[in-house]
Image (tube, rainbow, N blue to C red; front, side, top):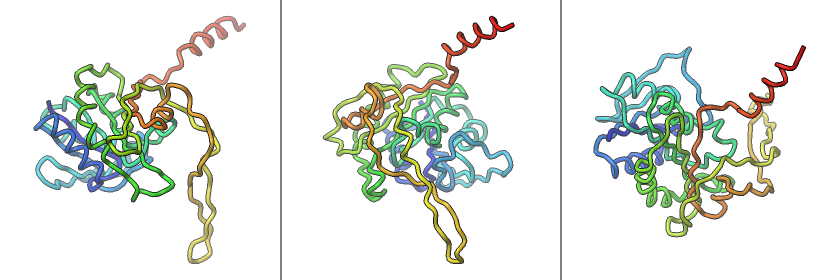
Length: 256
């Protein structure tokens, strides 16, 4: 099995090294193609107005000056002599659940793999965002990652579906099994804009987040992580709301 490993935290991120290690527990045929620098939050963007510069770090390890989506495209169409059998994106430093999936470059890389017809899995290690990245305990992803990967490969990943895996913020021994989940939804008052001034007194603004109180929906990724479970959420490429298609079609057919 050939595995293409990528991420959105950049070529030197510890989570990428962990993803490569997990991939090598599955296969000896592993390539790494990752962004030159941190691309968190770029979602499914493409570099259409800028050139893609490629740097070979070491055999089978490449850095691309571009987005996670660019990396998958370059890996599949330029670097590899044949397509990979699996795209593994991550391990992201921080959760990718609920509405995070719409912003995430980690999810986007797996999405691009799925668009290209390649089974794709995104992996993220959750930590306490408000305590800072220095609090990240990677052990849950490190201990359980390969087993999760093997099980997903054995079960099979349907066409046009990617698998979103989130490891809870606890030591590996405290993880309470696996939950197959739905995408959750947080309250809408967690984001805020901080107003600041630079050294010359000019105003600038910074998007930030604050703690909020909300109850995770039953069966969601948010609930699973709160229970220290490993969350696996199948995500479809088709964003169409099919019930609304039916009701809209009926409404417009009835219109004069």
